Image 1: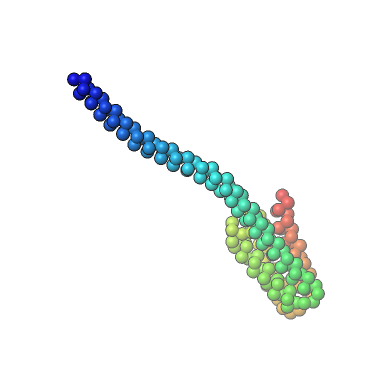
Image 2: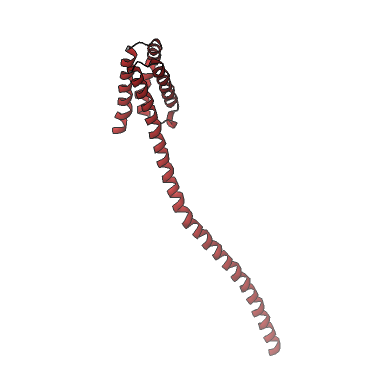
Length: 162
């Protein structure tokens, strides 16, 4: 009888040992997989956060660049008109007004903030008069462009300072 009991105990230990081996192996694989995912996330999260910060800095720099380009275009038109070079001034002023219209119409995707868009929108009403004066070679166009330049700077810079 003790022989049968020993065989039964041996079978129980063998079957239990095999069951523990499989669960131990699968548990070990699960732990390794969990550790691998943890290590991945530990490496991924700081990179993702840094990329997010860099993207926002890039967007801010692009916005400032667009504003600077618009400012430079208008300043160039004013200088050309003051020098009596009306055709280049007309072309440059037209480029400025086209870009300004695009930025105002872009809404939240614009380089201009909402208050800046509101401040610069009235400048578009003077577009046709200034372009006509420049096309005629009228010296009064230089003064008109200078006024637009001052108004543009006031509208854009006043909002940035606040």
